[in-house]
Image (cartoon, rainbow, N blue to C red; front, side, top):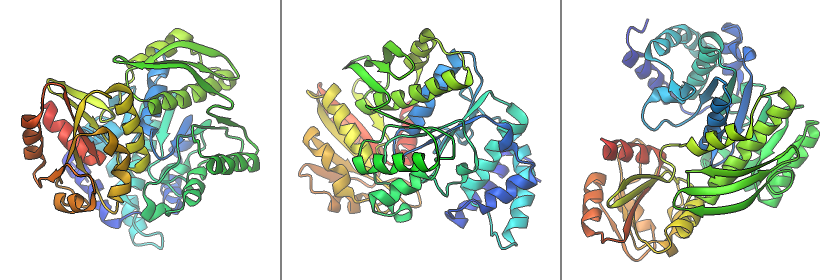
Length: 431
């Protein structure tokens, strides 16, 4: 029996040693033993390569403004483990984590010595989330973010009211494959019979695969720039302003504080999913509720300004599509600034092709590393990049201090790369 929160969390993290095991057999077995808490929930399933967290946030804040209680399951966390499982933005409390771990741990022990094998860390966290929402918190709606891929992801145990796939690009290629269509096939695995799909995917071949999948599942697809669209878009220092059009209504005079064209698309996906729920499930969502919800939506570590003198922005752009979006946002909002970058990454990333979109917009880049099992050394990153004004420092705190000392009055510091790195830096800068 776990007596403390730290004991429970240490146990969850110890399951990391079991790695990533795609498949739903262990999830199905555990939920069967727990009397299927997921069947008591009304859910929305959000997958895609980038923008899942932001899309969930836009949906959550609009639903909150409309008077609903909204559960969210997201990953990875930025400040505290408990924020991954939350209701109306309030993380699960530590006592509930302890109680739920004590219910799930015996099942993990039984599974470990059976042909199923030990459940993974993410599977256990998903089960704890479903248990929390289905037996303790009882929110009106639960927004579930896919962990990795989709088809074999542990969240794919749910049968949602509507599914969302944001963009489809190259990430987790060591697991999902290096071929875009293979990745798209895995993402499309969340599409269920009779459950409509909302997507902001733009590549033609990906859209074709998503369209064919929805057809075979006898359900509808809502595509950005086809069934719904963003119009009258302009950006300024306050964020992004736009209007939204769908088959059901037009919503005008909308504003989000998160900057970048990609964030407008994420908001569009959120709005289309909400419009479907409004029209077909009777959710009460008025235009003023949409405006208020979008305006206050914020997602930590996504083009987030932490300091104004000097300006410091952190952004978890950890794959090629994320970096491309980041480059466009810099061009749109900071075209005249001299931009200094501090960058760190994990694992088997193709650093050069990932960073290339940034090169035309930045003045200098410093590579660094941080204390994490899969973090790449600063020197290794430095050697793999072709940008001419580059340096490296294995100590990221010192890298930040040195860069700030070199900055002029019109300069901007951008700290980017792995979300785990951004999380650590963010905590340091805020405290």
